[in-house]
Image 1 (cartoon, rainbow, N blue to C red):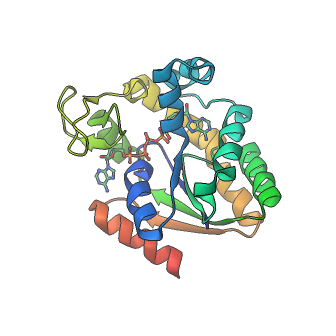
Image 2: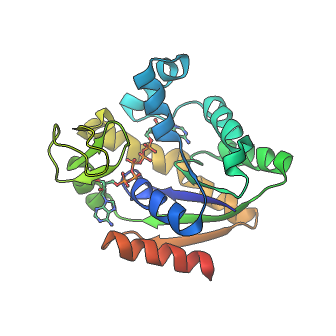
Length: 211
Ligand code: AP5
């Protein structure tokens, strides 16, 4: 089972990914988390990605496709994977389809978390994330501690107002067209209302997958 979690920055993909993964019994791949981990570790990948990410631009497709290919080939992905933050361009959709075909898999569904821009700006302006496990929080100050692992909560550089505006523009230009690509390629695309209590959004997503 390969499920693509899709939506504007701040739509709630990272919040929903572990909840849906636990319910479905599959692991997650969050490219944003992988890239931030590489930046913290100071690897070549991190150095290549940092400038793009800080500005709110997309990291080149070739880099993302390398991450996807490696993750889908791992034994832990044998029963499937939830993709959080992949796919964001039509070339990534095409590349993922090729990798899936090589591995005898396919994308089963695209879950679109639907939310308007005002709500996004409000969410991201108040977001902090755990610097170790990446759990996102709203309304918790930087420097306070994560409920899950005691890690320090920090603000993401791309949650500054200019970067948020750029990420929303990049979404409209480069990412939104991916939905038409999936519809043309006969993949189930389910649009979920992403506003409301987190557990309600999870229930809507699971119900859409089951229908
Ligand atoms: P990434 O980390 O994936 O960021 P994003 O897609 O911009 O998404 P966010 O993490 O900002 O939002 P989210 O939808 O996960 O929402 P969240 O659950 O955190 O990518 C970062 C960067 O990496 C990209 O800009 C790009 O540079 C690069 N990158 C990554 N993947 C790439 C790819 N495939 N191709 C190219 N480049 C790539 O929630 C947001 C806030 O809302 C949180 O505070 C949360 O607590 C709160 N919240 C969540 N749900 C609710 C709710 N129901 N009600 C109220 N508040 C809620």
